[in-house]
Length: 337
Ligand code: IMP
Ligand code: MG
Image (tube, rainbow, N blue to C red; front, top):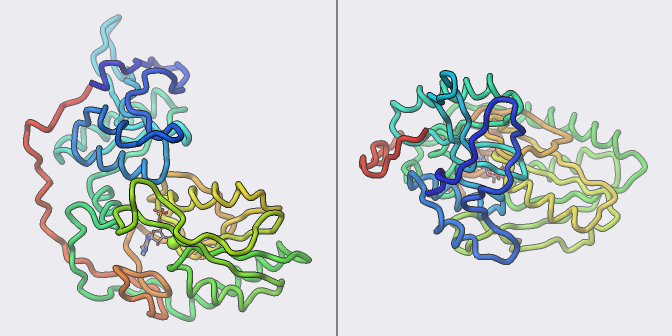
């Protein structure tokens, strides 16, 4: 099992991962499923998360490290083995998707880990956050939740216009004397792109890309570009225009793709930043609004192709679906160090 080969770290040790890789995803050309199959995940949601990371081509290692949290003399009395390590991001992820009762224990362990190993980056992915994350792709217990219409309005049409005009001013100032290539990933940025370009005071070309999405009809095992740019971004000043940055996984992939063309410059302008959900850190040059961890619709954003045409941005009222997977069979649970 993966944690049998885990390296034990003491406080002060360098938090780098080498060796001891239990399930390393996607060395070029290899089937990521094979990496997943080799790992004995403690919970099905961990396997699903690994699949999601594979889809976005984010390398992961399952439980590569155990951290000493408490000891009496030579004897270690408490250890902690985070679920995932993402080498490219130098980030550990602990999923608290098992028994709710374990959550407080994990929270405490994570706090202690942060105290003892201040250089170690760790993110807790709570059950609720995780369910929302995969629901976005049509998986998990919240996926089937019906909407009960549009809830509170977060940004009115006027507020949006005001902010977009300000953003366009900043962009125009920063790109003075240059011609921009605005790139949009279909389809959420539609309204934002259309308004932004009209307020720009510098010349701009526009082009679009489309991606397959996780669990989608043509999703497959890894994210793919289903529609690439028609203009050549090489040597151009590329401004990627996004509706919303959530985990950042889509953006990371798109930026890597665009960077390969060697543009003269590459920056991101996003209308909304759902910062609390970020997994992969991406540099955002322009941000319209920071938003809470809620599902938003309108002004181009959809919930299953619904509500895109609203002129404002609002919360979507989601029916609280009963969570059948909250208590997995005891056999599936494994108390970890
Ligand atoms: P990421 O890869 O997790 O950052 O996902 C970004 C994409 O997810 C966005 O471009 C949107 O298409 C979609 N998305 C994330 N949050 C929302 C939301 O609240 N409403 C609608 N779409 C969203
Ligand atoms: Mg998008």
